[in-house]
Length: 316
Image 1 (cartoon, rainbow, N blue to C red):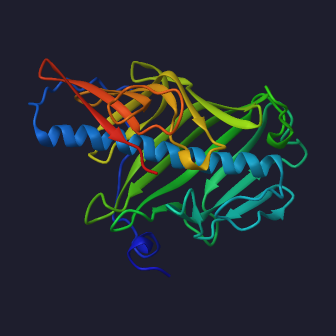
Image 2: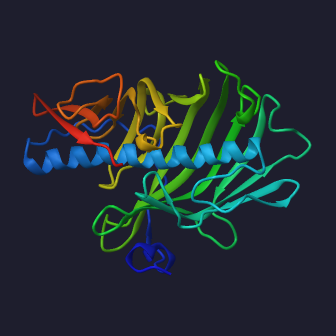
Image 3: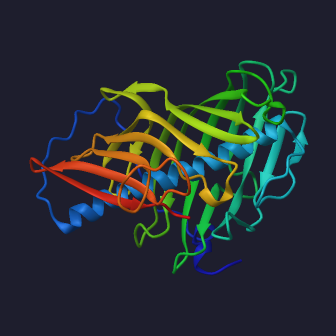
């Protein structure tokens, strides 16, 4: 086993965060604008992208294997059909996306073998982990020291449109509904590893655009007084948050150089004391671009009655 980045394999968290209180009143505290506040806002926005990107990649792997039980996945062993209603993916610590990430853990996919996955409304349950591997871990190898994010929990995926990923003709889409109550942690968040709730309710569409697969994500619930919410829980500072998708979030998942980073879209991270508006797919000056590889996201928020903003780079 490897050194620091394998901390998840040896440390059992001694503190688990409680369940998110649904319907909490909005936090109205106004903080003074300081360097540390800007740093906090930037960290929250960067975590939101990283966590969702790794979740999206995990889900798309599962969609590929549910569509084709012999699918080849980067950074994973061949899928293992344990029984007629159970397939497992085990990640093999190999690099993905320009050697910047390695993945460990497993995915257990439970489904009804009597209902083909191509059937509209077919449902599968995804577990982050199996009997031998707890959870799903992504290590960011180019960071020094190496940092990691880990996901645990159960996710329900519904093939709303029907169809199989490998059979999509140009212009066709497969649309899935994702619902789950998960937990996550980053290995650089504290001396004692703490897991935070990460709840998901979203719609994901994958479209074949001339041989390029474009994924679009929409928020699919109303909660806490907020609309078009795609995920909610606690951020790493233990603040309750709700993330809404104002404008559909788009990813080119055929281009490995993009590493699942959004090429366009707008999210609003709400419920925290200073809500953050995030515009994806910008250059280093914060301007939206329509081609090439984007630098990151442009974030803005109000602090003590005044506006503040920053350009936050993506992780590649």
